[in-house]
Image 1 (cartoon, helix red, strand yellow):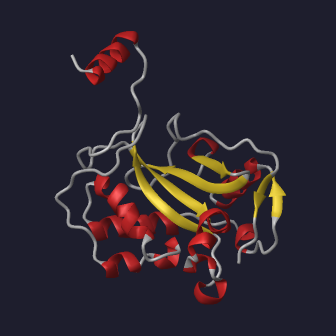
Image 2 (spheres, rainbow, N blue to C red; image 1 turned 30 degrees about the vertical axis):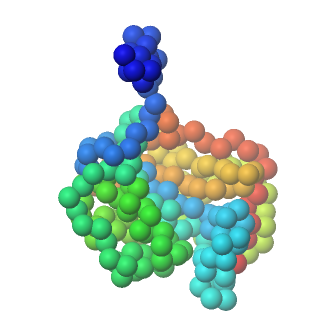
Length: 217
């Protein structure tokens, strides 16, 4: 018996949960979507500036607030990734057309490769669905006008989204942090993009009371 098989048998017999994430699953087998909206200034401060990303160059690409990180197929526990699918990959033109809401021309290609293939949709249909999901969420005005750096409790960000989007509930929205900064707002949606509650492994809110939120630039 191989070490891997022995490990899996022990895990099964002991009742312990197996790792939630795998790779290479069959496309279309998932329970719901997670719409991930990234606070662009955080990504720029931690990653984009070092890459000289046009997303972070206001003079070149305009200012960004919450951008579409991705529309992720999700299971009640865990998520599929890098799925096998007969669907053709999108063209450069198709992925570049998402830059207005994703920040860069390459972002949509990476999201298709890791997550979109798992949707069971064709490439353009998936990109169109991701845009519909993004357009279906109202970004609170206060964040679209945030030009100065602020420090705030993470729950305030969630509350602002709930106020701006009455159809959402607290169990269907979660805020994540990275390096003591507001990172993302994640919204759980059914396959028809109706709001729903998040699974237990998604709804782990950032609990910082002094999270940094840089102003848009």
